[in-house]
Length: 267
Image (cartoon, rainbow, N blue to C red; front, side, top):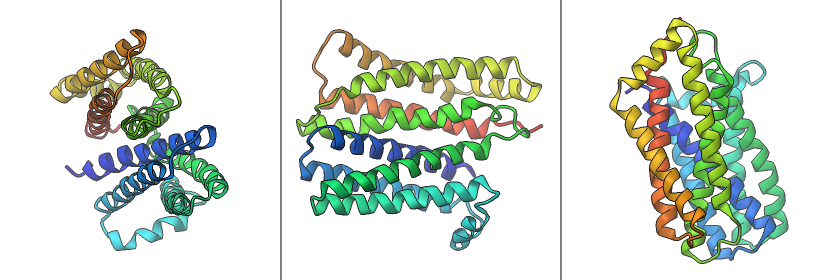
């Protein structure tokens, strides 16, 4: 599949950004042991690095990727490459400040990296919001990209913190809000495709006709149900629950992004 590198890149990069912002925010509001913070930070650097490497396979000339930044004034792709590259670089520096146990430097570096990460996701979404592909050309694309980050990032960090007994903030509430927002965006997206141009309606028909569409919905609903039921029942969130929900949502977001590319119909 020609678009597979883009699927992997967008999902992993948004996971890395969401996880980074979560870690930085918790570090500012509560106490995380240095070993735990470093472990999470390095894990996110690895994920972010993998995303960069995989994205190169989509290019006809991977070793000329550096040229992408030359058109930053006019190209959203150039902006994505620039902002995300800078984010990965600062996330590495952020990890170094965990090693040095320099909390103030972590705070400042994390703040700048957070802004760059947000700009990277924004730029990534703008690449696809083009009139030539009606299924992509709406604000739902922007919301979907950010929601991938909001759903996966906190869950990823939460797995580490719960297992190590250091989760001091209610990440479950954040993720549930993300689930609700994602559900609304999903309904608006499908409704927009159905009532849009013929090419948009065709994208919906192609998506619904694929098994992975239903697998995606199933994993999303099951993950939402698990987290919501345990939260409503005021049951203790465990590493197992967070891990299962994270894996289900990772599968769901991966399949959704795969269909995003595969069912796009041009004018």
